[in-house]
Length: 159
Image (cartoon, rainbow, N blue to C red):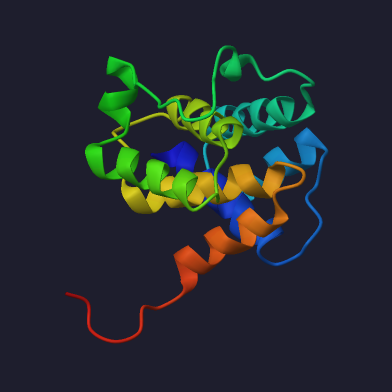
């Protein structure tokens, strides 16, 4: 999943290091090319990021029509093929502990479905969640919680 590698590179280089992201598409493409990524994959990754930004800028939430409190998500066959049982369970867990809302969950699923390649691993899904939360205004606390879930080492014995 080269496109995912590009997204991870951008996230780690700019977000995690507090370096300002270049919004000039041409400069960013040149930098990614110098880092060894292919131009076709760079284009796909930049479109993925632009679509994520478009989800944030939207005043409407197309995914939430008819969603009532207490309702649950039924996944399509295509989504099940990309998100295994463990990943779907993790998304439900994140909703239960209020790291994800119904809106941010749908944004995560939308972005997962736009990734190229094989089904996503749980670790890769965690990074997609982190990218979505970072880009979703008003989710700073959820982002911090998700960061803790990714980077904290469990203490004691795991049973």
